[in-house]
Structures are given as C-alpha cells and as structure tokens.
Length: 123
Image 1 (spheres, rainbow, N blue to C red):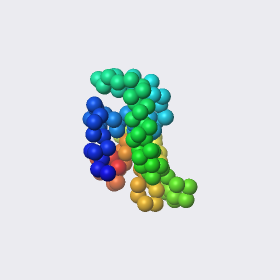
Image 2: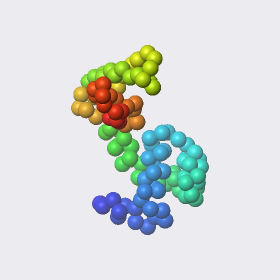
Image 3: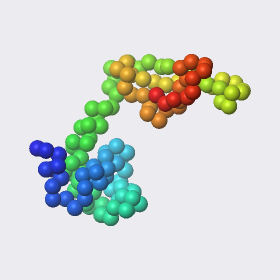
Image 4: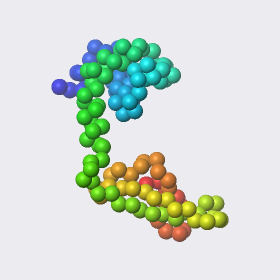
C-alpha cells in the first residue's frame, strides 16, 4: 500500500502526523506532552487524535527506530581528538564513538580537526 494512500482522509498532512507519532515512539513522551508540543507549533489537536495516529501508524515507526538501534554485537571504535580552545590553554580531549560500519556518529557532535592548519568542520 502506498504511503499517501494510508494517510488519505486525515485532516492533517503526512508530515504533521508523522512528527507526532515519531515524538511518541522516539522520546517516550505522554500523549498530553505531545499535544502541548504540537500546540506550540500551531497544530491544534487532542491527545485522543494523537493516540489514534499512534495506534494506526505507530508500529511502522517503531520498527524503523528499532532497525537503527545499535545491536549488542556491533563493534565500536573510539577516535580521539585534541582541541585547543581559543588557541591557548591546555588541550582538551574529545572522544567520538563510531560503529565499524561507519554509521552511529553523533550528527551534532563536536567539530574535528584533520590537520593542524584545518578549520573546524562537522563530521
């Protein structure tokens, strides 16, 4: 079944429904917390609406999140970077974990320097 066909007949766009269901399954928030978060974004709906979305679309989102979770058998390697802050003072050690497959790095992690003359860039 096509994705758009599953969402047909709902008042809200796919992105709004998907965001609410993702919040519920990713962060284990209560339905009323999600209702408040959505209201802050300008989406008016009850917690019962979010509950029905989670009941219908939740298993797919939960399965996707479980697929991306690290498994016990995964190998993790640690990269270490020494960074000077403002060019002075002691060097600070930063450790970044990554799976052997190359995925799993924190997208919002600290910047790294590949050689002394480089400017900081994200991973």
